[in-house]
Image (tube, rainbow, N blue to C red):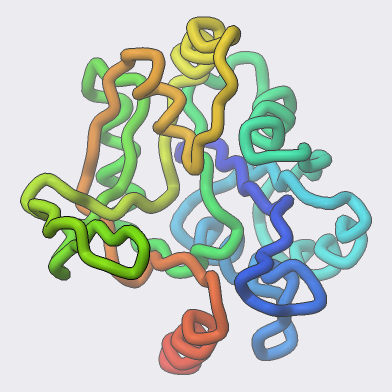
Length: 226
């Protein structure tokens, strides 16, 4: 059985320029988060914890009732780390590994999920993440001027889902408890605590819907699948 998935969906998505959080923008009469959850269920995920603004729970439940999955709803926090912790509190006691996934990455692939799950269970690591090599030239810019060109050979773009071992995650938080954390993904907490983070190759289709261009591209790809 696949790991339990924690879907982080408490953000407002300001870059989208929408009057509602982007995960609730409807595409073909269904919210984006629906497609994320349905894809995971189609790929074998049976237990999901949705970390959301609970005022949307009833709205979402109408869409998810058709899916063959155990879905729990918990309240989102004031920032990502708090939301993840809220999700972890809802995980079953015997659960050792969870996958944390963005609500607006609806096009994950079977191979990526299999690779992540196999890696976290087979290797001595605290976390495993999907990455893609940076292909473009990267410049450091300050004050509207180029400072230098960055060597891209060791640079990678990071996505989700990110698989974590729950005990190791709590261990990392304990190590870092006296520090103010400002991280943009869950693997960063493991890194800062000195724990091992593994990688697998990601997939370009599993992109994050951030702005209107991403939304248009998702609609195009979805139309191809329907």
